[in-house]
Image 1 (cartoon, helix red, strand yellow):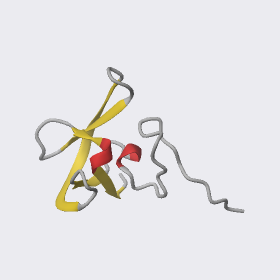
Image 2 (tube, rainbow, N blue to C red; image 1 turned 30 degrees about the vertical axis):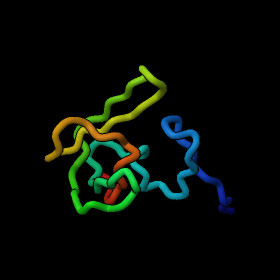
Image 3 (cartoon, one colour; image 1 turned 90 degrees about the vertical axis):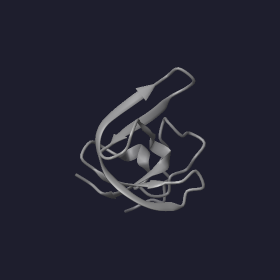
Length: 83
């Protein structure tokens, strides 16, 4: 029997992620699409090649995406395809 539970992640405890394509569930090798801060798709895709975490100002998770400079907050991506 399936239940209607929302999934909470430690990096965004205030958000209820209703589906598992949110960036906080991304793993190395996943194909992701970048989103703007409003949550709208921008049409830029890439593969996750590294994951970094920081606890300096609370828990934060960053993804390194092939073809993008620097690191991207996991809340600004959505998973398109799993590795």
